[in-house]
Image (cartoon, rainbow, N blue to C red):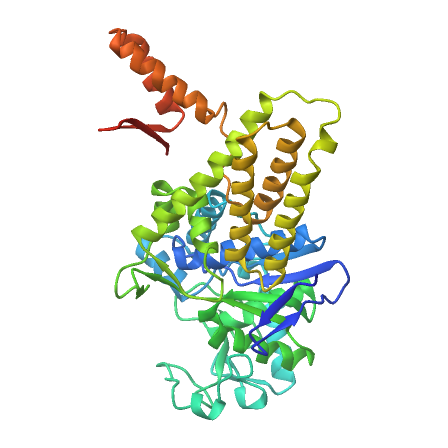
Length: 469
């Protein structure tokens, strides 16, 4: 089956066909590195990680570029607050970003270009726009002449005449038209700057991605992605400036993920309800954060609350327990000659589950439905282990688990010597008997072992219950 993608440009699902057979060029807008990322930033990071993983599972070679905006008004203000330099701020928060995505199980991009390392590319791009009449210099700044690009607004489906009444001209801007946007900002006294044909300054935000995407992927991308909030003005401006220079589509497929709300409220600085990823991963299993992000279709809004994250933790615990039990069961199961023939019925069920998994991801990367297929696998595995499980069948189940996890990334990292469910229950019985016999040393030893393995014991009127952390 062919992958279909909802293209924000056409507002319809389209069959995916990369420009070069077997290869995909995907560019996703990365962070402005002046602070720790919040969970709204984490949604595209996690979702497009799954897109990249699934395309690789489907046999594509994916060139995946995610940029760092390492010079910007926000970095300048942060440097002033901290009494340091813009490069030092950028270095600190690029390190923090990499630590956060590693914690979330996100694979690093093929390339993470930084704006400050591509100033010559950016200046050259702006110069082309000026030479072709699409841009103009104005007292040290350079602006894109929006009226010169007749299709401005086609990505966000907005009318340029209407936009003129909704755009406020900032103090100090010297535009011909309110809808024109800055490509090069003349430097203020003491600001970080680079020499250019228009005087010392630094790039505007929108031009950065156009220049870096072209530098690494040529004139046209297969997929350009980011959050819905970037569709206008950022991506709209990218389209205008890139297509004015090249005369070619900037991207054949545009993908935008929905917003993340906190307790049904929009996440915003004014409300102070942002949740930083580096704090959240200390309180919540990283795989539960991934699950939370993927359990809703990427184009739909997502609501974060204590209840939704608790549900996600319960779900990943169920998945992890099943996987762990399969591995332990396999260790204690002897392979018998001729088992393969006996497991044909199981393999047919696994083939059907995998077919559902693939079909759902082929349909605009429907991760909620892919997770449903994963739970079908969990149910099949749990049922299989209640019977006369054979090594061949356990290996087949684990192989499908590994494939699904290679795409979704919902299993925790390997833990040494995880305990099987029945082993835990046996230790609890032994601890109970030790306490009855007043063998406190052995009871404490078992309690410490269970605690070490992240097993929580709870006393209830019905007796001792346990759960994995």
